[in-house]
Image (cartoon, rainbow, N blue to C red; front, side):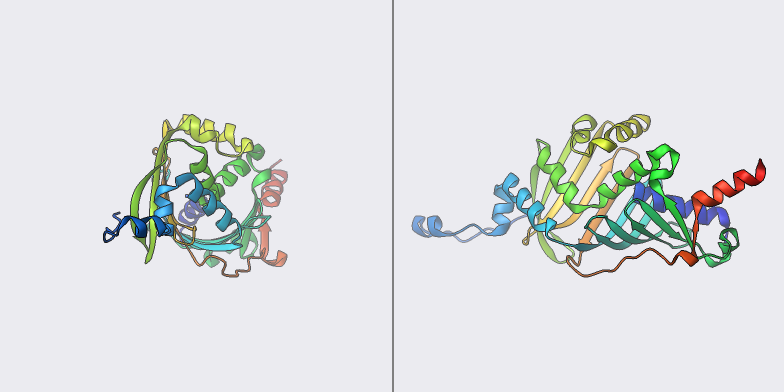
Amino acid sequence: MNVALWKKTAGLTIAALTAFAGAACSPQTDSTEASDKQPSVLELLASDLKGSLQKTVDSTAKTDSVALTMKGNVNGQSISMQGHLNLGDPAQAELRMTVPDGPEVTARMIGPVVFVEVPAAQRATTGGKRWMKMDMTAMNGGKTGTDFAKQFDDMDPIKQVRTLLGIEGTTVVGQETVNGATTVHYTVTTPVATYLKQIDAKMRAASEQAFTAQGVKEIKLDLWVDEQYRPRRVSLVMGKVSDMVIDYTDYGKTVTIEAPPAAETADLAEMLKSRLTTTT
């Protein structure tokens, strides 16, 4: 297996980690029946936008985990990713990603630390160890950790709903079916400056710098919510930087995500330090 190709795929995995209609007509009734009838969840999702989004935040916040499938483009490269998120503290994820002509890469995230599985053919570079450990907060003066946290935010369904709540101009597209579930589709397109106000202050400056460097002027965010007030799909378009669609399933399904055994893990920071010592 080509080393450069594996490194490119692994890099894209980190970038993606670190880098998110028509309602049926009802039959007519007399005025008394109409006034007594309670609106359905779908009707409320369409008519009470702010209230429904807040209920979606509250409902999703009670969920410990969710499965996801993500497809799209990051920095011009097509990617496909599947895995699980544990939405506790610290956040955890296990994701499998593929790119065209590249190997499948498995990555685990425990808080700000990412473990990437090294292909068997490349393990001579890690002393035969199966996993590579990368502490994102310690890389590139902490900027890599900030970028990574922003990319995880893009995958977190709760964060996207909160973003819609904080931005004016969100509209209802209508009812749509997503993976067999009936949902209501919301959409908003907003200037980068407005979007930045909705993300964590710790990530704001680095995100603004990245958007400016890539010429991103506006962000388009779409959200599909089901009758249990759970996000089923998120579409996030950030200029030419990324265009991702994330589908969510298996809410609340218990998933155990653990750091790999220390004996099977090579620490990237230690490897780099050792090489610098050897060459000086």
